[in-house]
Length: 410
Image (cartoon, rainbow, N blue to C red; front, side):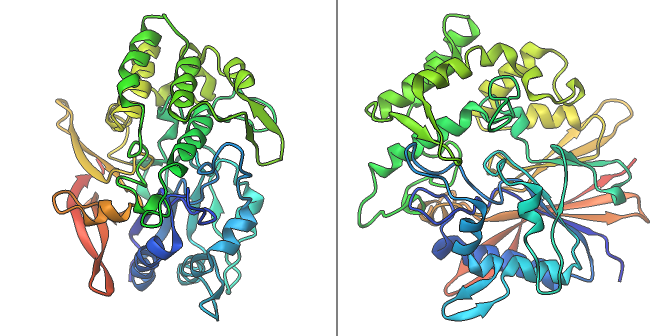
């Protein structure tokens, strides 16, 4: 059988299962296991599984808490990475896929797992001795796709989440402002935990980048002030989050046990809006033609409206399929070009840690999702589908969510 399928899973956000973590093993573990089992069962057709960023999460901890290191995350999630689970030694669902695909698993960093180093990933060994292949950089073109498919996590297109090599060059190179904003948001979440709502998975819209956005009313004014050069982005954002959390934060405890204070933070990220996108160190070809348009899209479109469509449309001029993550919103959208009547597709693989209320929403339920791209070299086309994992009684199963859509490689 021809191996002609690529699978993309992004934004699982596996952490230590602390209450502030989006991913909670007891809630999301069975969904992720089911997705991985689906891919494993199709192993004769699968060329590669691409872990498209934010598989791990070291951002979702309150400011004065020590974020978990890689080994702590692995140890806390044996059903995925192997170890003792429910009193039994298990291989781990991801490790089983590594063996089934004979090591054809690629890993890209996102923003929430930007501290995860190649040496960490190399430490992941399946029972058969396989380990994921680390993709260096932010963009990946699988070789078998004839330079017509591009994938990226998508965070370079976020003003708050993009790597910032100008502001924070030492200690944690590229660390963006969003890291600190996110940690302030988890502090807000802790103030709303109850016995009935013990962690973020029980909170409405938990698991979404903007689901627990508690400063909505301030955002419009912040953007207006920054665009009109009447205020500094970092200053306005941190001030708004400080207000929302009663200004309780004295410092941020970093993974290396160092501290960063609020005054230091405002100095570090002063001028962020004007420095982007050059501050990312990414070639200009990956952004919009004008820096001003790129800045407005990265702040207003990505960080506020939670969509990457302008950037996907730009990339789709050179690729027939663009796959991203980051927004946690599964999507497939065609882009048509007047000449020569070409059609491209932007697919967002969605995420694997929606909240319980989100999954139970009767009108617009959210599901853990992932993308499949089938390569048809005979017809010179891609077939793109987005799948969802649903719970049916006590059972979990995979169903088609979007597609399939066929796109020419030409």
